[in-house]
Amino acid sequence: MTRSGRPWAVVVTAVVCALVTLGALVTAAVLRHERSTASRPAETTTPPTTTSGAGADGCLDDPCRVLGPIPIGGTAVQLVADAGGKSGRVQIGGGGASDVIEVTITKLGAVLGPDALQCVGGTLSACVVRGSAADGMLGQVIVGRSAKWASLAKPFASDAGFVAVQDVTGQQSGPEVLVAQHRCDRAATADCSDTEVYVQIFSMRSEVLGCTRDYARLESMPGWPNPDLSEATIRSCD
Image (cartoon, rainbow, N blue to C red; front, side, top):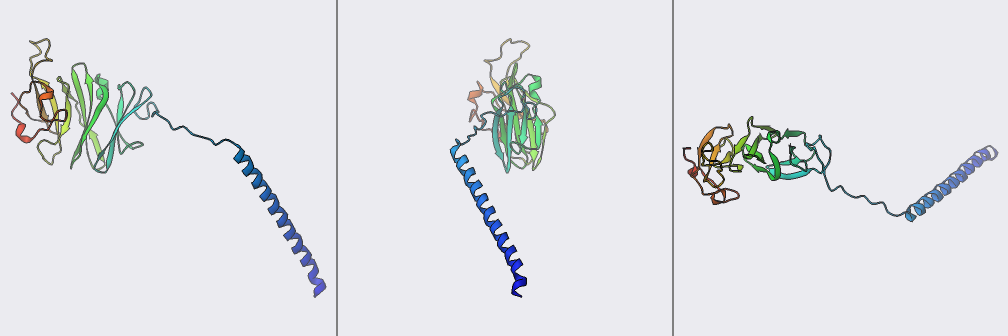
């Protein structure tokens, strides 16, 4: 019995020796790697300072400008525009969002500035993308409820240079669109820039609800630059 067991003992001893040798080799290799890694200078990464990706996010010229995000309920809304403000897209849900709406007023000559995006939350939320134009300002209104957002069919034009969204009437149909105009007959007056202004008030269906009284200038409106209008300020448009 003892003799028949000796070969197995020899095999076991050989295996143990081999494992010990292999372990020593692995340990030596690890130590060499650690010494090599420790002797190298640490690698650094520089975070990007601009957002690029022309075409994919609405930019034509880098660097892209991101306006927002503006929190609307649990949704983030932001505008990505190219450096010249001549194109852009609204991203619903923040960066990398799947719901992207193209800005169309730039195709009509509007240029997007640093205050191009303005939003109001509610049962029906609304944002306006606005840009300066040759005849004042153009505004594109985007409305949304939950995860469904869409752009109104037609833009709003202001010859006084102001378009905004605001909850004026408190109706469940959503906020209203404010569009400032000069009280001026352009057919008879070459320069209307010094004439009085008033504000047209539209529903989300682009229906005219009424107008405000005349103001000497935009800065004379209550709460300017964020006008604080109420339903009591609405009167018929003369």
